Image 1 (spheres, one colour):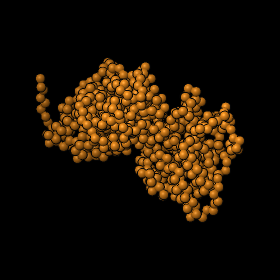
Image 2 (cartoon, one colour):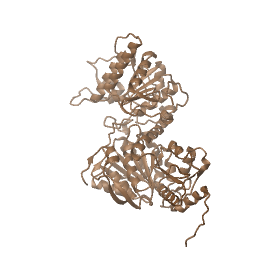
Image 3 (cartoon, each protein chain N blue to C red):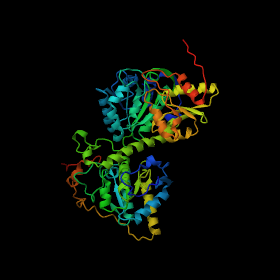
Length: 236
Length: 389
């Protein structure tokens, strides 16, 4: 099966059940369901991000809430990558619970109805990173069923058959390698771009890092944990 | 309890030295649990169980397991297994016949909850009139639950499959339960030679953070006071996510195949791949089929064996390839419905080549002669039947 952008239709096919296997080694990736060297997959992913409308990065909980040096490094690498993609946006997938009565599609993406965010923002190329594999697979398949979005899965584990491009064992170093290849492809395509951070999420209140308190995190406050040795006095 | 050192799973399963012991199938399953670094076991072991969970209880008493308890009944046992697994520990349980069916709703929910539990299924009769005799009809109920299902022929398979099951279940791209089934009594109560890995070696502990779903750890409040459960009720979910969620379960089961190749040498074993007639069998019917193939070779008949080790994922491609030139296919089974024959018929072209039988059930044994009769019919061999009194 060739895993290409949709919309595929009412009920998506399952790449894993159609003979697509995950990349067999850490330096391999999948491109449209075929195993290739990861550099080839990275180049195609870069082309999609540079040429399609509204490229967007969806960081998941493993990066957003990961209190580990690996997660910090990945988050930094993702920001470095985002700076290099012209007009890139970052829309988080902070958790996996269904959002009711209705999701704010400009603020977040959710695996229960990812197409609302994709279609509302007219996203034609996206990166999933730091999303637990189960939920990434659900989202990737639903997006392929209902949208024309080119999906790229940067996975810290074994990868995802249902994305157009997947990289496996991808942590900070590999994300930076992808960034370097993207810059190279951007130069080859003659696209002029000064690196800069994506705009702040328009649906979230502006954050002042000097005065921010737990209350500013609203309903996500329960996800905050003090760092080791840190004494938090300002709590609910 | 000897001090156990943690070793690499590949080393333990594929390279570690082995010691030969003469033990029952139930003991064999418990020996695998002993080496699997299991944290917790929960069961409701009554007749018609096997000794397995009693032996695992002994392991707990010896200190191999951190916790063990007897639940109020199977539904409770298997629901508690789900909770323990989502809490991050490595779990094991076993059941049989009516117990499996009583807890089947909970088992059917395990794959969707991404529960990498290992389940021993020591098959018994499930129909009325109640019996505690061997019969593997219950496997047919298990086949559509979304779990990986392995079917062990003998005591050695029970050990190898069970130990490998823990490793396969916890692969990030699999992460669904693995059931290891074998015939109650014929395998569980009978002794056979088993090559065991060293008693002082065990698998690494489970790492619940290397998973396709977040574990329920200290950062997540208990489900009771949680506003949003890890697996949400359906009111606020689209039909499509239910659909792709089910797809993900079956995709995960399919991904187990590469690990079945790695750790079990593949989903099927083939003897005489150029045979004219094949006997396809799983579980202890494969032992009788193996004997039938040996008889046939002694009589100069070109007969081969396909032993099916993995029932889920079902090795359609492999079976189709082996059977492509077969003139006839005999499928002996220990149940009345012939679930293996159905699976094979659905997988191959020209499936009128399949002889769905012989089948024995209700505790009856499977004489090799019944399999030979079917082979003779296919090959047109006339035999005088002698009745020994």
